[in-house]
Length: 282
Image (cartoon, rainbow, N blue to C red; front, side):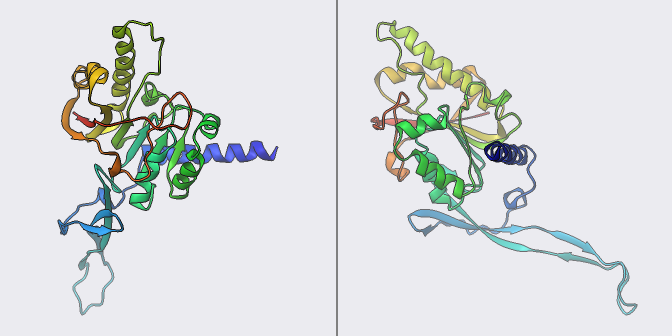
């Protein structure tokens, strides 16, 4: 009975967090920014910069002494220095959705860089039990994420997420690293294998474009040689009403602690060099 109660409480908590993301209350980054230093500083091994935020709170006094003007309008200006932390393409003021996570080491790398993960939702297609059995560091990475305020969800299908599990949530960045439809029958024609991977990516794009802001971005990191070039990532974006904003060389060392895991199980890392991060937007 206690287990059922705790499960129900956990479910309500996650639902509440998702609702908060669907109808967000204003945060510092939603207000007018001004007076940025425009320079980056080093905090640990990660670049940061400070941004001055003007909240512009207006207050009107109705009852002031007769020696003063009645209904005098006082404008109070509150300023807060917000430290925005960056790791490669991502910063702590972005709302970030990560899909297709393996051992959650990429999400954990971002969280460590930001210091907090309250701006992140990290998901896996695999259930928690699979992660425990196959990835040595999955549970510790998930624990790290949750301790920093990240929403962690499992059994999230990136090809259906916009209308199901993550319906109504909006993000600045949606990230899918090295999407792969799985290792199919080796005897299957090459064209059919490519089509399966393309279908996965195309359906992901259709869902992701419903979940980003007008100036938001969809990021796909993908190997840039041989068989993988035949997937034609850029063409898939165009077919789904997206344009390529930028193509950037992917460097694993930019994300300390990130391990690229095979999706079929086992704790081995796969080689991801050379690869590129494709940034898509409207």
